[in-house]
Image 1: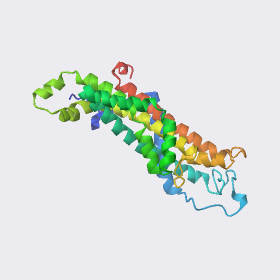
Image 2: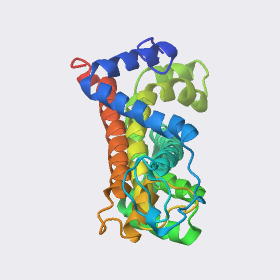
Image 3: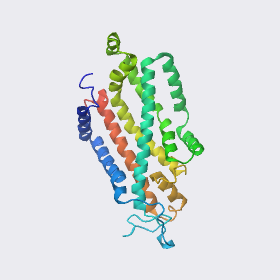
Image 4: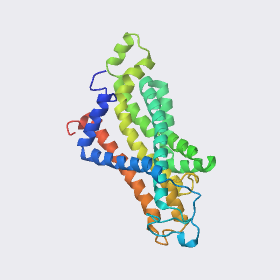
Length: 294
C-alpha cells in the first residue's frame, strides 16, 4: 500500500485535518462539532441535571429566563439549561453508538459482497435491497414500541436499520478494487482471501467508510430525535428529542415558552449541520474527482 493510500495513519489523519480546515465547509463543520462536543462533554460536569429536582410551587413552572434559571424552567420547574446540556450528551452518545453499529454491519456486508461476488453477493444484496425498500422510520417506530423505551434498544434499532446505504457504497468500491492487479498478485504470493480483505481492500475503502460514517451520525441523531419526540424515547435519559416531546405535551408551545422548545430544536439542527458539513467536505477530499479542487 502506497503512502498516499495510508489515509488512516497518523500522517494521513493530519493530512485530512489540514484539508478539512482549509475547506470553508469543513472548517465551519469542525467548529460546530467542537462547540457541540464541549456542550455535550464538559458542560454537564459543571451543570449536572437532576431529574428528581422539581420546583417547589406553581410559580416555578414554565418561567422564563432569570438569574436562577438562565434558560427558564420546564413544566416541573426544572432548569432547562441543565437539561439542554444533559440532552446534548445523550443525543450525541446515541448517534455515535448507533453509527458504530451501522458502520460495522454495512461495511462488513459491503466488503464481503463485493469481494466474493457470486451467490454470496446476490444473497447479501437482496437483504440490503429489502431494508432499502422498507420505510425505515415506520419500522423503527414499530420496533421501538415492541421492545420498549430503553436507550440500548433505541441504539440497536437505529443502528441495525441504518446500514444499507453504507453496504451499497462499500460494495461498489470493493468491486472496483477487486479488479485491480494487486489482488491476483497477493494471491500468487500465498495470501488468503481474509488477509487480502484485511490488508489490501479495507485500507483502500476506509476513507470512503469514514466519510459516509460522518454523514450517518447526522441521520442517527435525527432518528433518535424523531423517536423521542413521538414518545418512544427513554424517559429516564433526557435527550434533545425527549425535551421536544415533553415541551409539546406540556403545552409549552401554546404558552409561548420558547425557552423550552427552541434550544433543543436548534441544538439538533446545529449538530446535524456540523456533521453534514464535515461529511461532505471529507467526501470531497477523498473523492479523486474533486482532489484538484481541494
